[in-house]
Length: 276
Image (tube, rainbow, N blue to C red; front, side):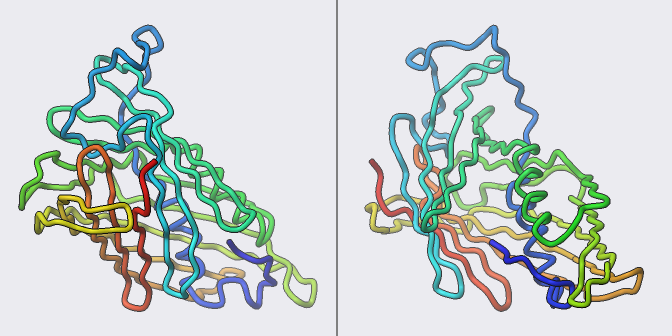
């Protein structure tokens, strides 16, 4: 995602720092679901909630993601298995992202309980992704994350006013790097980022057509904000404040049909292309 940069170019604006932070922030949906190996049943015996906003098993959901600069990449989501965790049917999912020869695989979970769908992305996966990207810039001297777990929950009822809520403290990341500049000198770069989610709701129930077909969807609107500060050798550098708005169209048995994420100067669109 990022090229190796000298310190004069590293974090040339605070947005680059914010982008690094969002690598993990976008993977930060945590839940309290715990696997119970003693209660795992064969896949065919699971009883899943038909109203859950979760992809159906034995199908592949193919997406196209288009960024503001016109670049695109593909995502494929599938349910690998369904297991039982303390009486809850848990879908074990895989998202496979590909761009050219680059492929990344993320394993995650989703389940429905009491009319609410919850998504889970394991924290270790998110941190590993982030740390590997940061290593391209320099030597990590300190790395701290607080605020986990964060919970995202959607009400399954497809009706205007249905809630999407986030629970937990703000997510905070602190990174300290030794970076070699163009003259061969070591510069100490510190970055502090804070992400805060805003609850949202369904604003409309409508039909949506994508290349995969026509779907009756709940249109969700919510958002989040980030504050990122960067310093060099103890001297304050850039600070950015970004506000993100998210619009998701979802339907039971599929999950997300389309999603648009915007800031004041960028937009990312994810759209379902086909179901296999």
